[in-house]
Length: 79
Image 1 (tube, helix red, strand yellow):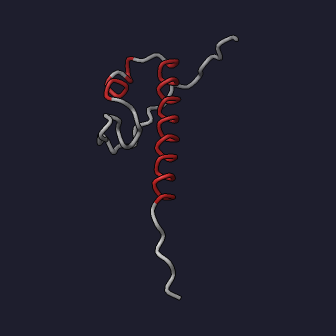
Image 2 (tube, rainbow, N blue to C red):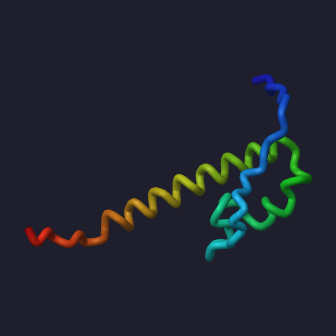
């Protein structure tokens, strides 16, 4: 498959939160320390790969949160 030419630079996923969770991922953009540190040195292909990984991490996080929400007992209505 031929690689598509990019006319625009790949934007940084940074959201300006810049806090790290227990696994070492930024809670704003879900990039690892190395992914944040080397972002400006990465090629566009590497940046797209990081964005793909961040998307997977976000989906995994949302699935985990949904499972946790489903397991919480709901308070029965009093009426």
